[in-house]
Every structure is written in C-alpha cells, then in structure tokens.
Length: 413
Image (cartoon, rainbow, N blue to C red; front, side, top):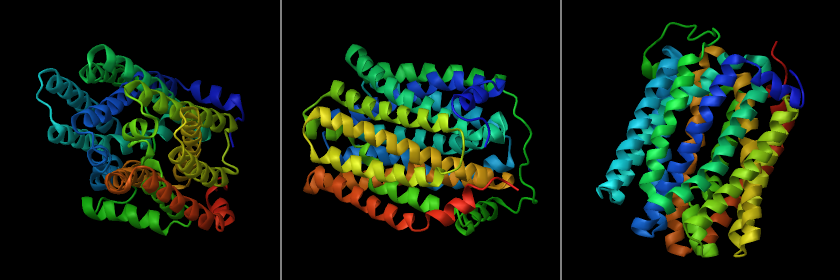
C-alpha cells in the first residue's frame, strides 16, 4: 500500500502540509519531554515517594480518560485546527506559569499535581484533534509512513528531551526546563497557521447532542471486529507494563543508584529504541502484517520490562530500556495505523480519542497502581508481575491474529 521503503518516507515528507507540520512538531515535542522529565524529577525531589511519582503521572495522563471521549466528539463537530491551536496556547501558558511558581518558590507536591492535572485536561482536547487531522494533512496513501514518522519525531524527542532536561536541571533547575518548554510551543503554533487541511467529511449524521454522539463513538469502537480487540490489548499493556516510563525516576535511583543524569540516560535509552522501531516501521510503508507486528511489539515491551526490573547492572538496564522502546513504538504505530485506516471518517475524532484515552489514561492508572504497590512491597515485584499480565494477554490475542488481520489489513473497498 503506497510507496515502500525509504520511498515511503520521502513521499510523506514531500507533502507540503506534512513537512510544515513535522518541522513545527519537533521543537514542541522536545520541550514536552523536557517538561515531563523535569516534573517527575521535581516530584521525586519534593517527596522521595513512589506513590507521589505515580500520582503526578496519574494527574498528567488520567484526564484523557475523563475528557478524551468528549474531546473526540468536539473534534468531529468543530474545526479541528482551531481546537489544536487553542489547546497549544493554553499548554504554553501552563508551562510558563509552572516555571514562575518554581522560580518564586511557590511550588509543593499538591500544587505540582494540580498544575499537571490542568495540562492533562488541555492535552485531552489537543490529542484527538491532532490525531484526527493527520489523514487530512497527508492523504490516505501516505498514512502508514506518516504515522511512523510522527512516532520517530516523538521518540527522537524522547531521546533529546531527557538529555536536554538533565542539562537544564543541572544548569538552572527544573524551572529552566519549564521555561524552555513554554518557548518551544511557538514554532508549532506557527506551523499550524501555515497548514491548509485537505477536506474530509466531518459528521455525516445530524448531531444528536454531545453525550449521545460521544456514546456513539464508544459503541462503534466496541462493535468493530478489529478496532475493539486492538484497543483492549492496548489497554492491558498500558496499565500493566507501560507505566515503567512514568516511574523511571524511582527506578533509576532504587535499581541503579542514579540521579538526574542517570534518569536522563535511561529515558534516552527508551527513546533510542523507540526511534529504531519507528524508523523500521516507516521504512516498511505498508499495512500487511501490521497486526502481527503490533502484538509482537507488546510482547517485546513486556519481556523488556521484566528484564529491566530484574537487573541492577546499568548497561543491561539501558539495553532493556531500549528494547522496551522498540516494543512500545512498534505496537503503538501498528495500533494507530490500523485504527486510522479502518475507522469511518465521520467517526475518526471519537475513535482516535479512545486511542488517546488508552495511550494516556491506561498508563496513568497503571502508574498509580504500580507506584502505590512499590511503596508497599518494593519496586521490582510489581513491575515484573504487571509485565507478566501483558505477556498472557498477548498470547490470548495471538489466537485471533488472522481474523484481526483480515479485518484491519485489507485495502479499503
């Protein structure tokens, strides 16, 4: 489907809109990762508690569970570009305010959780609009490569952002990382202003009310023979193994005896692996076999999490973190690609919002759960047990792999 190999990458980037989008997205995502690392480190400095690390991650990610489905309906009923721009401006203001609070010593763990929750609400509205815009930016034939390239950009930022955050924290404290992130929103806002979306159907049926239209999105996804099972698998992995990322500050110190520099190294290892997985997915440029790849990615991530939790040797821990990044990226790209291709255009905002709900909400629940358990029984056992749940779920899903492939990988009629 579409060009293969590196030609798929070149074809996607040759689209004016997508090239502009990507250029603006790079600094924005680097800033986002700087802030995420800085928030986690600040929470750890303030409390030294796995529970509070989990609580901050929960505040960041869980609002998508509450507001994401409503935001998906909003993106189906209104101008997606306007929603994206407005939420970007609000996120920039949140980051700048957080920086000022740290600068003037007006921050404690409770206000940090509150500010993080605010950003989570903003992101809940931003994410469905941005994801739903992608087919209107590149066109269906370039969609697999474009989604993979988005992941490469995101995970390159996961590699660069933590390193930059570590340098910023050492040079000027966490507030410097927050100031940099606030500034990094500007290029993406400029890019959104320059983009002209290709027309795509919005809501075909007459709106029936916010709650009814939102419920229709749930029903559509649940009844779809391919989308529903893939989202369930994503939910299981998100709750039971994916929270390794959110709890890295505690793992870095307890498993390996590392400070901010070590946290940045482990986060960057995840990013390197994720970029490798993303480059490979982009070079494929096709959907054939992508269901199998997505399930294999979930398995790789879970096994890597078990290895990470079982070692205190830093080189092996970094290798496991990189493998986790590979698995996380290939499963995420695979799932989003088949969802975007299979969903009806007028349901796109609502269904990709459910993808966003699981992408952010499932790790939020898992981080709070694993973080709380880590304070009670130690940090290694909960992560290993959670990853084993993911392994079992993948083995169950593998039995329906062929049916899922027939439903999701077939070219559109």
